[in-house]
Image (cartoon, rainbow, N blue to C red; front, side, top):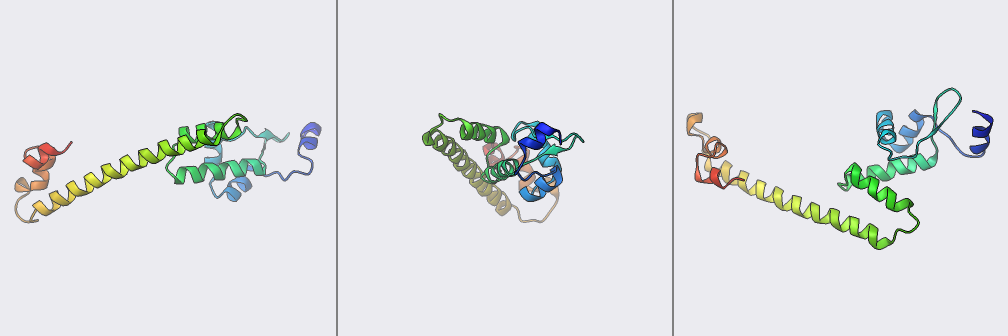
Length: 152
């Protein structure tokens, strides 16, 4: 490392991309992608060109992965990260983001329930016998039946 870089990271554990990815339980391409999307701080580089990752990078990658598991998009995560580092952010602002995500999840669940019920109706309407030209499922999907006309 350059002398100023050496001094900057004195006493700090640093990692190459592979080790940082392993510690964050992602692959190297994910780390590169997050870096490209500016979701993690741009790492310094050693004189050799290798990126210098710290525990801060690893923690941020883990934060991103946990947020994704809750259904947040990368754009939404970027907003959360910006709120996280903004000194003036209040807990109510973060709560508002979570409530907005929750409402979106509720709407998706309602939509999936509607799809489930429609599929059950279609499956129940089909005896599973005969020529495909008489298949009520295909007729509904083609919009040729009353059930099909009700599909959005």
